[in-house]
Amino acid sequence: MSLLDSDVLIEIQRASESARTWISLVRDELVALPAPVAVEFLIGSRNRAELLNAQSFLDRFDVQWITEQDSRLALQLVAEYRLTTGLGFADFHIAAQAINRQSTLYTFNLKHFGAIAGLDARSPYVR
Image 1 (cartoon, rainbow, N blue to C red):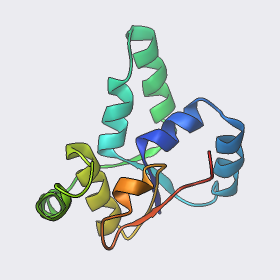
Image 2 (cartoon, helix red, strand yellow):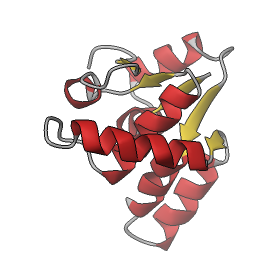
Image 3 (tube, rainbow, N blue to C red):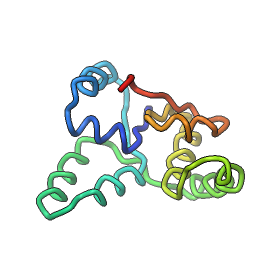
Image 4 (cartoon, rainbow, N blue to C red):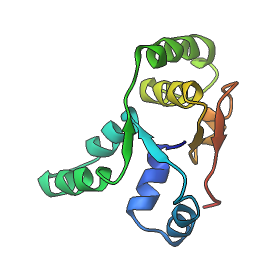
């Protein structure tokens, strides 16, 4: 399974040429969203129409819900990496979900996610 970060999800929604090409290459893989990514995506809505469009778009993806194990690991990651990365609450949960599921996290934020040991964070393509 591969997990998508918010920045990749937004590129897919905007249907950039690179995103369309990349998503067609991974079409046969299980591509899912960590729950915090789905929440961040909805929070970006500025009005009711955007919220409804965002909800409809999210329906295309499997959402991976946060487990107790994910939250415990996120807490450990915060203690270890908070002062050396620019990651926030949602990001630590996203990283924990990827580690616990032994999944690749596709993100353009390799500078911050790349610092976490045991996390397979990759850019889907060069922007």
